Length: 588
Image 1 (cartoon, rainbow, N blue to C red):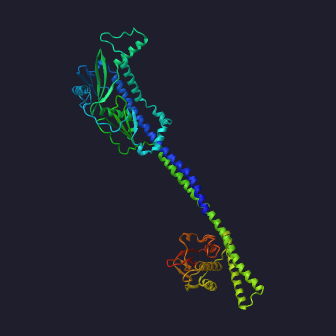
Image 2 (image 1 turned 180 degrees about the horizontal axis):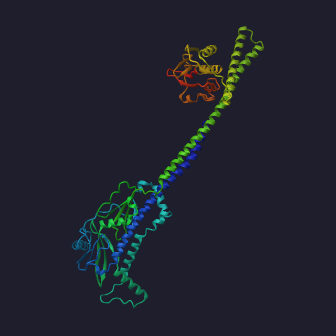
């Protein structure tokens, strides 16, 4: 049995190890897919914001140079405060957007802010240093360190180039396209020749390459790239340099950052329900990044590409339904593990019962062989001595005859037990139940067993009530049951003190009871539930000290149940072990 347990543990570990590994990988893959899915959503939200900023930038760059500093039409964007132009002498002309409400700055305020920036050459208010540098046009995950381990983050980074997330991420090109266009315009304006006052270049002259350079230079002068800068906690300035003749003019627009953030939030989140799970907040160098929203499991921070790189956005996402399928993976993993554990437990139970039963059968064969050999050896020895005339004393011959008789009875009882148990196992043991009192049968058994008990050095005490209600039982079966119980008590209580066996009978509201009690060591608690099983012995077969085949109590239970009664065994508080049989009173 010990080998079987060891082999089963090895088998269970070999089976459960890949199962646990598979479940672990499934859960981690689900977590990674969930992470990648939410990050994809975050990337697309920020990409929509970048596209919105690209449209704003294209609209401002498309404004003719002559429109700056004069009365402007109604605002195309709700966040544009006004436009301005700074001449080479430092004079500022401002034109607030018509339709601007009281929250917007007026012409004087636009002139003051623009003039202060260009005269001083720095923002109108000091900006604190950024806590963590981030490249423009990039998105970082602020929660990945807490949600995933280092190995999982490395796996996620490796998947970005080969998974669907990598393909989706490659579509987020708004920031890259705008930066590339800005650099192209900047290169053209830096390298192209400037026209002299009163002498515009003649496109009809020169080589093809020269004409292309002149066209590029003209486009750069007409629509140069814009730069951006936060000038205070509320305003972002877009500006460009326009050359007229040999003089440079600064032109630009003033944007209200709060209104710009509100507008970008609508562009990014849209109206398809994402806003119910997400919140967007914006930060500039003049304020600290906002804290994540309550209940947000995924937080991403994006720094916008040039010329809006002074502005960053933080997206807080609550878990989106249907992204990652972690709930189903957890449920399936739990079901798989539970099925595996229950299957192994059932397999162990079935195999252990078979192996244990086979082991007990093997021990039974060894025990019966020993029990048969012992009386046969004694009978043969005494018989040969008597046959050969080796015993001259009449007293000795009488003693040997008595030993032969006792061993023969012992042998008969053993054979009868085996045959009786065999009939019980095969269902061929029929009982002829009769209704009557138990007291006479109990007293008869006591008288028959007393010589045997006293020969073993025990006292047999009988305590039976004078009147016991009639019950249904079979006399032979009851006598065999009591004989086995008393013999069992003698075998296992050899070292008891006092050496006394109590046979008693009584009745109460629960029925009629017959019990056999000894004062031995009792039964260890771990064996109490198995003592009535066939071939079961609490002692190891090779080291046991008591005789027996392991069939006595199994036969007792089989016969008692055939008579419709119940048998139980228990250790007594003051020492000893008692087996009790309960009969139901016979119907009147």
